[in-house]
Image 1 (cartoon, rainbow, N blue to C red):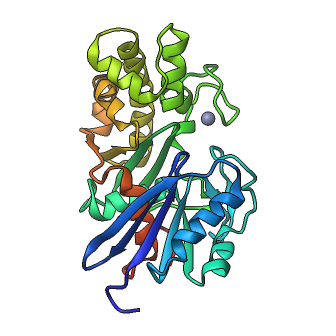
Image 2: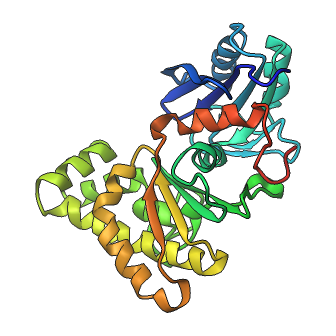
Length: 303
Ligand SMILES: [Zn+2]
């Protein structure tokens, strides 16, 4: 492989599959997206194989919204896509259909890798990454490497409990951050309060119009997020937090409450640098491309 081979990054989201073709020297060569098939895993496998097999690149990274097996070839848990994913040898399946080298990566780690290498955290070594979407994900970089360990679970920020005994979370526990401040929870809470939001974007738009129900839901979500961030910052020692994902615009309404929670802990954690992601909704696909790009990989436990 020469120093500037094009690689493909594919990010499988709940509604869109985003892809990017990237080379180290030229950056993004082209990119696109297609709707995520909702009829089950085989349709998603076929759609991704078609993208990879199109002769666009000699290696492909695929970001999966879930946990991977320890050998990074199979899917262990995908909570938010329809169909049977558990145990699927996704990387092997894609390679045998396309002849292209394929690696899988957890989607939050793909986002973090892109922002750490090329985006908001470039030049920083110790960073907490938060992805705000339908749910809330996270990843942690220490010493310039994104942490990964057995079970592929490091960084499940959304399932840290901030309201003991609170709302039931998709993971089965109660009071998780995701059940208070995730995009789906924001919509559910506004609707429970008599509002009409259909999407997290509706909640953010309405909060921008008037100081009402939507804004108070976002402020309360900010208190929960601030509590969890304060805990993680205290535990990990990071001083930089990068916030991204499709629901990141909601953060503007959460930030005062997050700041207040962090200010209450300033003697221990010092000043925390909260910054928005730079790479937009293409960060996951870009990070997936970087996993197979010809440069040193920065995810712990991977070559
Ligand atoms: Zn949970």
